[in-house]
Image 1 (cartoon, rainbow, N blue to C red):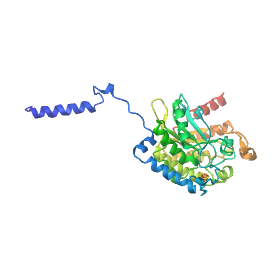
Image 2 (tube, rainbow, N blue to C red):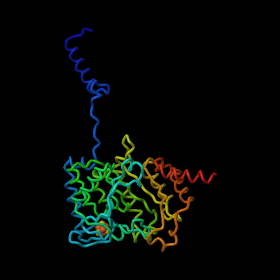
Image 3 (cartoon, rainbow, N blue to C red):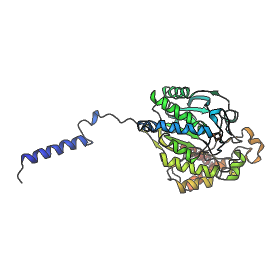
Length: 351
Ligand code: SF4
């Protein structure tokens, strides 16, 4: 075949293009690592965050932020079941080292504890904060500064504890903080008692959902969480939506969580939490690789003493059974600390 000038130019262009796209490009060593971008920053770049804030704030006028749907006008100072004012009340904000390892890393999870709660369980460990609303009322600007302060301290994320009733304030603060340089993942640390329709507003804002799944039985939910008999149904729907938005948990190269769902399930005495039903439901509804933290730290708190069924700590046997059930139903991404604790109890029993 005759090799013409045209062939030469064509082959040269092809080779040049290939070198530019090739992983062994001579410039590969100088290539900048792509910065991870939080969900809320992407939404702001698309020009959609401001609209979401407006939509969220409108809900305050006839509050239906959560499944209690009180219908009060919080903008005018009316209070509903959660007793929360329109401004957020903060109990504390600090790096927290008691969360899942992938949230804590080396520098801690940047936790902000919001006072008041829309669920109000009789066994609540934070009852002075959630039931009595102890804390300081602040503005959205100050909330933004708290987020930036936590980031400056090196925290790996902003962990919003009990955020449901102050979601509009959070969105507003996030936008302000973003403009001042916030760039770490947002963790929505919730009781799970969330309206599916309201969660839609958080699509593209939250990076990590951290919902509880407390009960699978309507009667138990009503008895121990102030009449919330719809908790199992509502929370199942909410978790499916959370999973649709962010998927299974993803970690960065350092093992720090950047996106996804972590389900927390507190084992309760006398199988009150319905662990078997819960792990079966997760295994049948979500990927088997869904991160599930089976928690052993139930303790008798607040008004739990008045209910004989839950007026004791859990036994080692109850915890062993719960983790074993999760494995039996095929869940493959259990919290490593829960698994280690289960193994410890097993080892102790066999000796
Ligand atoms: S957030 Fe509070 S006021 Fe609003 S619906 Fe829920 S419990 Fe009622």
